[in-house]
Every structure is written in structure tokens, then in C-alpha cells.
Image (cartoon, rainbow, N blue to C red; front, top):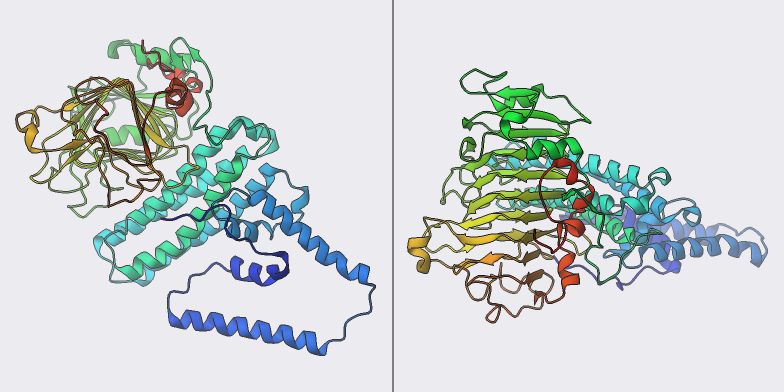
Length: 589
């Protein structure tokens, strides 16, 4: 994906009316018939305009009066230009803003809110388009049908996130104070759109094209809204800044965790009061985890805790947005397992392949192993997919091969967890920090390479990325005997603005001296952000690393600090309440 620069040519006020007509009729000309209809309509309008100009006598007005509407229009467009400066899609931005009445009287948050509201309407139209494709096309294969279902779910999630964005932009909410929340919501919305499109990677071209047109247009609106956030009065940001330092610690935990949640996470399993218990032997309230989650309250504002007793649970869990403030506590990662084997090789989309999927905000899991045992030959097979904002995983294990841990979107934190996989086994577009975790590369298939991360940032204004701090990067037991037969890399760029940083971590000798791997030729090598800061271990030597424009050895603590829990995911504002131990900055304790 190539983005035009912010200096792309904007429409002049003199050809604005025709430009506005062209820009605000959002349709894609996929065939000659559609193009012909468009040209015929344009010719008809032009002929009608010519007829008016040549046959209608102009009213007698003073020159001064005739200039007033034109001057007003010119000023209106100038204001739109001003708001759109710095966006990646300025022509779309100007054409959209110029349709808003009383633009001169609107504040920056009101302009962004109006843009987002306009985008909500387009998301609804795109969802209708997806439903129409499913209804009209009878020859969809299983994977295409499932991809359509993904899109409908993702569109619904996008609408909810955009509506939350509008709410946070209201004067009552003090938009500047919600800057990080706004960035997160808009970044998540854009991720949803591209995830929808990713599901059609192997579909028929005409189906993908019919989905892609509206999605690209919507994503450009979201991108423009993200860029305009920096203009909100009171927002502290600069071009060199990734994230400002934010918040403070409390009792060694980020502030968004309540005191009760802190105690829950610090307590042993026998000390916790559970709302429900799941046990395979019938000694609890339910024998399946799915039943217990269904029984949990919707839209809860207080923590609801479900105990999952030891055992292997062969279930697929989809924890919906309505199940807020849910906490799952197992009997330890060696004792409580949730297992599944869905995979792309088995006919599922990557998005649907997860053994567990969670999009409920403020979700916590402790002492559980999440596994996808589809094997190394079944391509993408997710153990856990998280699109839950302010979610926490503590003392958990994620076991799989390709695409084990899908950190899909929003803000996430992983502490003292184990992650096992082969290809791209930590991937997605969340703003995520993994701290004090063990990352293990397994033995892949012959002729395969191990890649620890594949970060999916689509836009330079998104606040997303993968930060790996004080973690162990090593070979799993099955890889050690054949270590010399397989190359392993720290990451590769899944999307154009991929961003991953390893800090203060112990990097084993399995990592190739180059450190990082290309995705496809020179794709994203200039636009990615890959960094290493004060790592240790035999694989941490950076002298033989890649020389891509986007790669850097970070020597500044102030730069590295921008990828810490406190700054990158605003952890000091929400982690303390969970009770999970963490450190907010570069001081490892």
C-alpha cells in the first residue's frame, strides 16, 4: 500500500463544485458498463449546466453582491484545507469536510466527530454490501462464506468503536484527556477493516474487489481522522514522539487496575472468591467454560471471576464485547488447558481459527494454557486472538505453530507468559507489551524459517506495535537438537508500517545474525520501525544486523522509554487495578 504525501494536490476553489461531485459519490468503476454510465451522467450534467449558462438571463445584481457566495465558498474550502493539512488523503478529506455546514464555527473535535459520523454511515453501507454479496452469490466456497461472516462481525465492532470515538470527542469528555483512547479506537477500527480484507486473500478476484473498494475508502476516512487528532488543543505531541510519558504507578501496578483486581491477581487460587466454577467432574457450577461465560452478566462494571479447575477443555470460546470485566482463573498453566485445532488448512479463516477469541474490554486471564494443536502443516492456526482493550494475561501459556498468538487490536499486556510457535507466532496490530515472558521457537517443517513476530501496522498515525521487554528469546526443546538446520528471526513486516521493539531481553543463539527477515522483497523496509535496545545473550549482537532504512539500534533511553508499559499502552492508568506485577519504565525490578 502506497500512501500519497500530505502535499498531494488539493482541489482549487475554482473547480471545487465539479470536484465535490466527483469526490462525494463514492463508488468504484469495476467494469466498462459502470464507467459508461458514469460518463453519461457527467455529460448530462455538463450539458444541463451549459444550457443554463446560455439560455438563462442573469439577474441584475451589483458586482459586490455576486461575489459574496463565491467568497463564502472560497473561505469554506480554505477552512477545509486547513483542517486537512497533514492527512494522508487530503483530497478525500477536503471533499468530505466541505459538505459539513457551518465549518467555520466548528472546533477541531467537532470536525473530527463529524468525519467519524460520516464514516459510520459508510461502514453501515459496506456491511450491507457484504450481506448482499452473501445473499446474491450462490457459489461462495466455505472459506469465502466464513470471510464474509468475519467482515460482518468486524463491521459491527468498527461501528461500536467509532461511536465510542464520537462520544470521547464531545466537549463533556475533554477530548485532549482522551487522546490515547481516541488513537486506540481509531487504530482498532482501521485494523478491523484490513482484517476483513485479509480474509479474502485466497478468494476469487471479483469477490475481493467488490469488498475492497468500500473498505479502502472507509480506511482512508479513519486515517484522516487519526491524523487530525494531533490538532486537538491541549494534545502534547510532536513528529519525533512515538508516545509521551503517561500516568503514574501505584503499588507497582498500572493505575487502570482496581485495588480489588490487584488483590485477585496476587492471591493464590484458594484465596479468591469466585462467582462461578467450572469443573469437568461436575463438582462446580458448570462442566464447560462456554456455559459459565454465557451465565456471566453483560456490560458489568465490576469484576466477575470464573474459576476453571484443572483439566483439558476442548472448547472454542468467543468472548463477546458484552462480557466486560470478566476474569478467567485456571489452576496453573501446567494444569488448566483450553484446546482446539481449527486452522486455515482446515478451511477456517485466520480470524476464526482461534481456540479462544476475546473482544470484551478489561478482560483478565490467569494461570491458563491456550493451545491450537493443528500442527505445523496446517498453516495459520491461532491459539488466542485478543481484540480486547485493556486486557491482561498473567502466568499463561500459548501453544501453537504458525500464528499462535494473535494480538489483534487495542491495548494489551502479557506478563510472565510462555509463547510457543514457528512462523509469525506473535502477530497482529495491537499496542501490546510482553514483559518477563518466555518466547520459544519450535521445530518447523522442512525448509521453513522461524519468525517470532509479524506486526501489522497499516498507518503511520496508528498507536500500535509490539514491545518485548525483559523477555527470553530461545529455542524450544524440540528445536534444540536440530538448531543448525533452521534459521530463526526476530520478526518480519506484515504490513507497511510494521513496528516492533526488543528491549532489555535475553536473545538466544538461535537468532540469525541478520536479526530480521524481509516479507516480500523490499516491501516496507523503508517505512517499518524495528528497534533493539540493550539486549543481552549470544543472539543480541547487532553488528551483523540488516541495514534497512527502518531498522535501528536504539541508544537513547528516552526513545526506548516510549515503548514501555507506562508510555506505550498507558499501563499506569489501568494495570494497578488488576494486581499484576509490572514495571512502568526501563527500571527492571
